[in-house]
Length: 357
Image 1 (cartoon, rainbow, N blue to C red):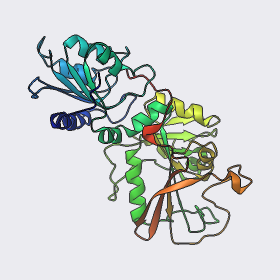
Image 2: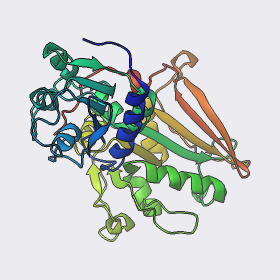
Image 3: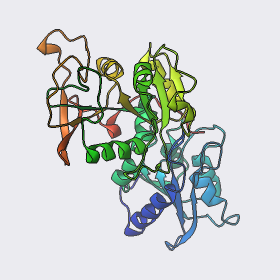
Image 4: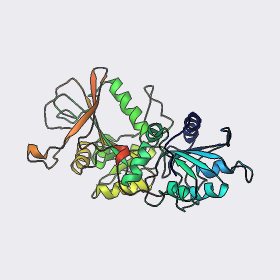
């Protein structure tokens, strides 16, 4: 049964489980999950976390630290609903049942068609189940994974920098630097937070970008986004992206939805579209943008170098509507953050999910 009630001890254990979850890899096909096992008296008797695809899930990792029979009557507190499928490892729900766990507390439901159902399996075995404990905190940590699992594609962030009149470059093609150092530092911080960063072949040929994330001092962030290139033109063998810490991924871009699904299968949960206008326009036109980051400089350029190209819109009725969710001053520049006006929300999406392995 589900009691719908939880104790302060449950919440404290869940916070610890969330801390443990952060020890796991932040990228890849599997989520970061932590688990704390409490004795009948409410004392912590074991902890565990998931270390990546093919390794023990958090619940099994925690149980492995207990002597046989030590989990009888205990409570398992886990950040994600215990899985109910067999991949490279067995179902966590079954492991908890066989260990004699009496109660399971979890934060966020597993969205997978195949991996979900662990809570019901536990209830069917007579185990008390409480869900939704610290769901907001767990959902924030798992945001990109939950999105990718529900949609079978990464969350897509499209960024551009432009003048007040919407130009991404001067008439001669020069664009460095439209925005100032504060805006550029913010871009690099957001690059580092994304699993992958994408450009079109036109941008590679014109600008030879490194597609790395660097701090204001020019040093690489510890975690770098994987470079992704869309387009049919050949990239020079000596292009800067070939020296990136991660091997670049290449896609023709003829079917963006299929390309995104391939990226998700390779463990990419969030994709940062860096440039140029052709690629950004293609994603916007296809309705595949989940967040816009528009850095606006207080300058006028005029000319033909628009930040976006043709979106196939012929009437105002066909406008793609977004909602501003944040407006931030960055030095002399302004950052506009917008999401689709349809109200799509990371934690409310429906759809199929990738199984955990």
